[in-house]
Every structure is written in structure tokens, then in C-alpha cells.
Amino acid sequence: MANTKTLAAYEAIKHKIIEGELMPLSDVSEDSLQKELALSRTPIREACQRLSKEGFIYIYPSKGMIVAEVTADLIRDIYEMRLLNEPSIAVQSCRQNSNKDWIRVLREKLIDPPAGMSEETMRRYFIDIDRTLHDGFLKECKNRFLLSSMGIVMDHNHRIRIKVSHPYHGEDRSVTEHIDIIDAYLARDEAEVERQMRHHIQESRKITFNNFF
Image 1: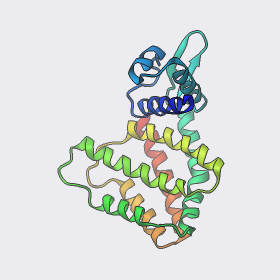
Image 2: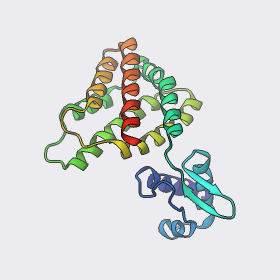
Image 3: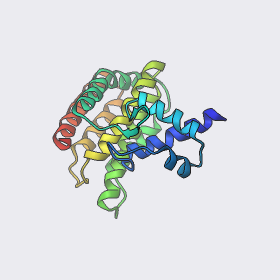
Image 4: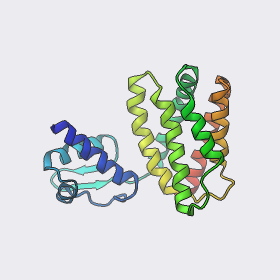
């Protein structure tokens, strides 16, 4: 039961950090989290220790905790990990004979988004598709160490994407890049999948640095 409560606390606190409810360098209050999440001190503390190891929280013994800031070094590390691993992960996924309907659904959502959404709703719509696409490739990875490490990387990446992305105005290059990746994937063109994924990550890195600093 304690592990279940710790996991619930971990997911809840991480969500707050990723979504910007807990801003960089803001205090992380155990007392407030206990009340809000209706959990005791132990699972909150264990969750924060895990989040500290993953780079989401700074813990200062006997002083308190704050949300980790997003630095240029962090962004460089994220994109280095993505470039080293995601093209290969996407190729591995392409080779498998698993059901590909999920990626066809994403392609349709990219091409034909619902009408009448606000700019913010549309922005989050494409952010969610981005995360679903990249997570979909990762879920088919058979390497337990890559699954664990890249899961953390993608959580950090999602936090940054929420911060730096702009409203969609019909000519978003990342949408075109995602469609190009999907088309190569459905054609089972492994070389093109790798090329398009690498290109997408490199372009994303440029945009992130331009918009964040």
C-alpha cells in the first residue's frame, strides 16, 4: 500500500511540475502536498526523493525543497539523449509487427484537427499528439534501461515543450515533421524514419533554444 501511495504522490507532484502549476524555483511544501493529496508525510517525502534523483526537485537538507529550474545544460542534455536514442527507437518500433492503428489515428488528428478550438486548446492538442507519438515509439522498445531513462527524458522534454510552444497558426513545421515521420513509418522505410526523426529533433532543439532564452 505504501508503494502505491508513493507512486500516486510521485505522479501527482511530477504532473504539477511538468504542467507549470509548480513553477521553477518555487517552494515544494510537504505540508501543503499532504493536505492537497490526502497522503501522509512518508509517501510525499519518498516521492520527492525520487523526483530529486530525476532532476525535477532540489532538496536542501534541513532547509526545504524547491522545483528545479530549466537550464541550458538541461536542455542540451535532453536533446543529446534524444538524438542518441530516439531515431533508433523509432526504427525498432517500425520493424515490429504490432498493430499500427494508433499511429494512423494520430496522422488523421494532425491533418484534420477539430474546428472551433481556442488558440490555447489547439496548442495543447498538438502538444498531446507530440507526446503520444514519441511515447508510442518508446513503449515498443524492448530495452528496459532505455525505457526507464528515456521516460524521464521525455517528461523533462514535455515540461519544456509546454513552456516554449506557441499557438498553432496552420503552418507549424513540427506538424509537418510529425507527418513525415509517420509516413516513413507506415511505409516501413527504416532509413527515412531515422532521417526524419533526427531532423525533427534537431529542428525542435533550435526552436527550444530560440524560445526559451
